[in-house]
Image (cartoon, rainbow, N blue to C red; front, side):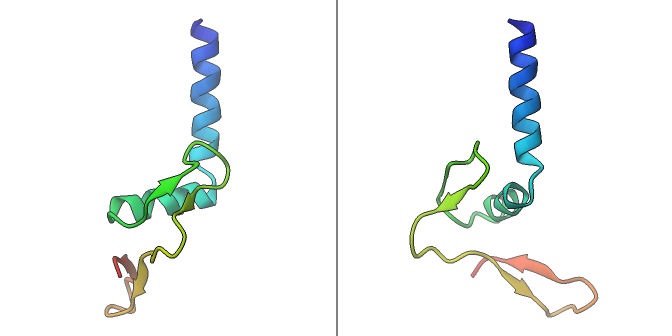
Length: 67
């Protein structure tokens, strides 16, 4: 049982550190998007949803901001 839980943790950590998952995590932190398939390789939003955009008001420190 412990080994199986460790394998689940390792799998989820591997997936969560993929580029698309990291982008999803940032958008979720901003409260943007209704996400599905969040434990898979390709998280998706509901059709037509607007995601965060780059705020260039400080060109030395660009940030994502909710639309």
